[in-house]
Image (cartoon, rainbow, N blue to C red):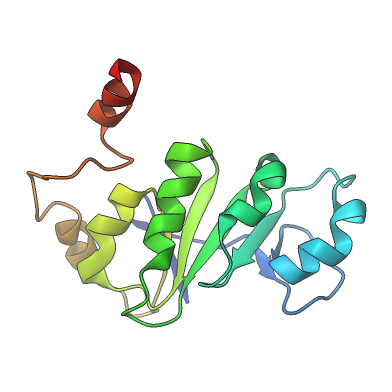
Length: 162
């Protein structure tokens, strides 16, 4: 899988640790929520970047107290019709103020790219045969929005006014 960030392909420094394996000896581990629950005491003391992978049924609310520990939060799109990750990205950015990388993984489609950007995603796992021009076009196809997005500076202004 290729990694799309800032409309460009980039190398992925993260190593996915499946299941509940011990990630303490891995540089840039991307772990599961189950692994975090098992190893949080040990990983809380490690001075290395840490990422977490949340399945679609795992809300980031479960990590609220530990969000500052993660550099990357990968949110799963297991199938096209499952949009919970859109809501999770908005929660992370707007309610919890997460400033790190929010990564879309799984069924990541070009036609949803713009909406993912507006929800707060900034990195995307895409197929190896990615058409960069097509993805760049998808990011600019719509110029007027009815709903505010996490990428919309007027959203913060409206929140301050109320």
